[in-house]
Image (tube, rainbow, N blue to C red; front, side, top):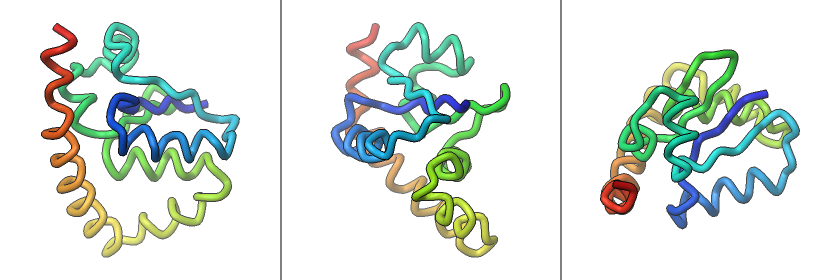
Length: 118
């Protein structure tokens, strides 16, 4: 069982995670990072850090960004192929760059959530 920590208040993030949820992967527990006390306690990360990237916890290890997607996709049969392809060195490095750009834009878009949780 893995735990996926995602921002359910972000319409883009929520839509993507809803798609994965609809595939009913039985090895994933979904955790909204806006349950700040729970998400920060289980991850050891601040709300700001959790808002910045997708995070996955597996066997006491926490993964973020592209590595988190790799772990998550490996648990979803329909996306297992993507977890294999994205680990190829050239694809992985390009994916990290693209992910970081998109994640930063989403962070800026949703940064107001930090003030709301104070």
